[in-house]
Length: 553
Image 1: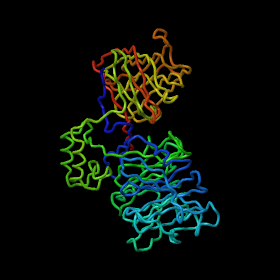
Image 2: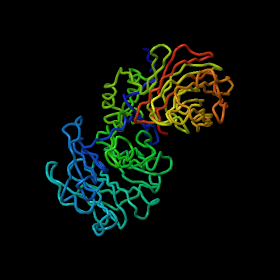
Image 3: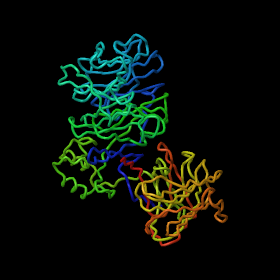
Image 4: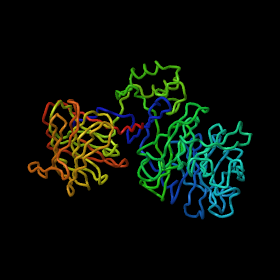
């Protein structure tokens, strides 16, 4: 069996990379595949998770059976490798006939901030939803009677979804109070010490707030703020975004959408980053498997160590780190957590040392076994519009060329999963390309991208076609592409709506087979046979995950 995994990535499993930048680039954070916390935690509706500093205790709210309203729950585990134990209702005095939700646990585990809304008339002291806090003398003791945070913080409007900073001196929350930018905004209140009163809250300003912001979560170093927003530029009903700042005295930067696989066409909210920065929790109401009408999910987070992008962690990466020793260089600041600590030092060296001389591993695959039968796997978003994620098995081509292939079969991971042939200017995300492909439920299509990083164009479609089926793509070397398809490899016809497309490219391009699952939760497999490439092509196949390492602008 031949394996053609050349361009590789840092984690086994689905990943998505977020480049975090405020002024300068931040080391890539690689998010693993989302996983459901399971039935011990998720039941009916489960939301708003917060986690202890040691990662062994969580709090959340739920309206599971035997809870007449939304109540606060807790669960524990013995080690961070163990499963969470069945959830336990926190009971009185935290839970009452009213609803309680969106808990936020202090770093010492002795304060639990949460929301009590006005869903049961007459229960809130100040407005439509108030912020409360309960305290305990040690983590083994019971929680004390809740205390309303008072009129400095709570108003006649919604004041909800708190997030307490690790030092206990900042409290972020969402509110509909006047003085913001639209209806829902994120605000913050501060205090000098834990013994001092909270001060008048301030709005985070128009860079962060657009009028649809909520469920803030502040990172352990206070430099990254996750939140939910329905602002333009998202993927669905509401997405998880983040904003960064260089220090606690500097303003928050332009928000960045976390993108797939966290965000999709449905709603995602209530992000919560573990104290060590290694796990992101969030709420989703459509991903599967699902145990309630919305569930809590988690994703691993780790730094990208491959500084020079050669798919191998070696001495060159070590030298790059040493060259920036003692500096505040975010691109190489990978320790002690994936989010860094503002200086290149021994903690970054320790992280790099754990990965030294390791090859990074591909998500998709491309194999030839037996000779002439190519099997490809992929798990990615789409090749459509501005999206450009798929697995690519290719050869180099100089000047005009033609590729023909028979798609024998493909997994129906989505009606819009795509398997076909492509000619592509580069292997970079957003590259110009022409692509003719077969889908499990939408027929055969011909599309392309005529401008680098632009939208795809063409969209010629022939319905009623599924694998097994033949496709053909020709390039005259002058920018003209012609596509055709056939049921038998002999009788060819144009794709309805457009047989040709004009896309200007350099003379040196890549030609080959492409697969996109159109479903991040499932691996798609396609089998190609009768592959023939004509033109001045290289002799060796290679393969790569195109943009499955998701880099946000």
